[in-house]
Amino acid sequence: MSTAQLQADPRAHSLDSEDPSTLARMSMRELDELFAGLQAPPASAFCGHQRGRVIAIFGLDWLPREARALLFKVVAELPLWRGQDIEGEFGANAWLLPYAGLHFGRFLVREVAGRDGGEVLRLDYDVAANPRPLRRLSSELRRLDDGLYLVRVQIRLRGDEREFLYVTLKSER
Image 1: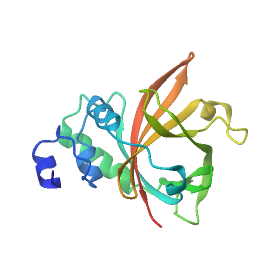
Image 2 (image 1 turned 45 degrees about the horizontal axis):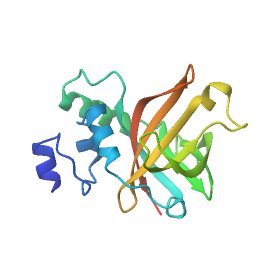
Image 3 (image 1 turned 90 degrees about the vertical axis):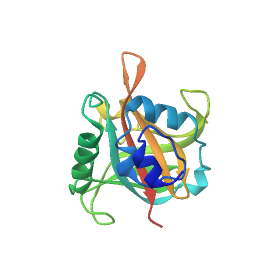
Image 4 (image 1 turned 90 degrees about the horizontal axis):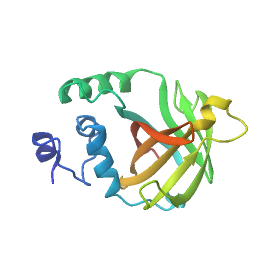
């Protein structure tokens, strides 16, 4: 399915779409459905700088699709979170300027079974270098296309993991 077709029907799911703006029009439930149909990449393929873009936040599905897409487009232009840098089984979030900015929010990369039972790359923030609140975060990652990943971010609250954010990561090797 082409990007034009996906834009015409934003609920349509395409594994070929590389347009985060199109994905940002989808609800959290639609992104959950898309995520469930994707495959995990091998951990060895997920390395280097990954340019990040927020495409969904829990609680914003009440906004019209176009308004959500515009909001996330504006957020993507802010020079704050730039993505992630990964080397082997270790990674960190890149803030401010890519390659020369601050690295905060370290994580371990593991191949595991995800919450839905399928294989995922899990980014686990429960590491000593992180402050205690950040250790409650984890992410599940699956491949959308070559060098493009859909990431579901979760937080542990009272022993239960809850999804609260979706981002895309695009390899910049």
